[in-house]
Length: 241
Image 1 (cartoon, rainbow, N blue to C red):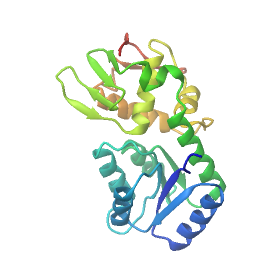
Image 2 (tube, helix red, strand yellow; image 1 turned 90 degrees about the vertical axis):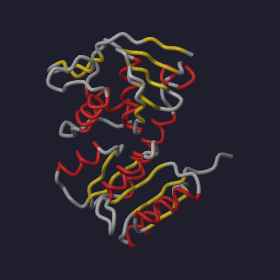
Image 3 (cartoon, rainbow, N blue to C red; image 1 turned 135 degrees about the horizontal axis):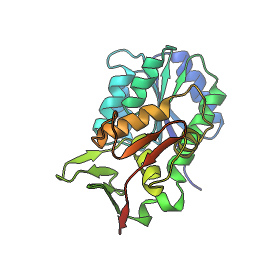
């Protein structure tokens, strides 16, 4: 029997930690709950974590700082950011720093569980043509994506680790070159949920990916915007074992 997925909750509110911990445990997940960033790093060092539920407002390093530092360590552990703020800016910054999803407080434990399951399912159930064993290296426009290491390599040999959301989005584009993908398709393939017309998370992630690829957002050469339709990776892609 497979071990249950291990969820790390990082929130300084003891009541939230207790309630979420009990609910997720009742639904078959293993849970570690901590109050700050220092304890988060200790939990990560102690063993495998499958997903982090990370509060934005924390004592010491806040959630944005912790998420940025996590991605700087080349970790692709999925992150769901919790925020008590309703401002779109906070959500966008979280996504830009590598969070996979966000949830504004107050929220229901049931919705959080649904998002956790969707993200874990998408991370492990990519279509066959997106799995690492289909091609070890994908070449496009002078770039190479190492699918085993999840690293982007430039023509000059500069290596850039990718966050989980960035990697999944790039894999989707590379598996559908020169095909327009609308926002609904991209949200479904990368996040496992229906697109909210007001949710601009895919646009934020496309912008972040363009930055990684040095693709000018005003006149992109690689990931082009098709007005009223979506985005298209306008390059040829070749795979290598």
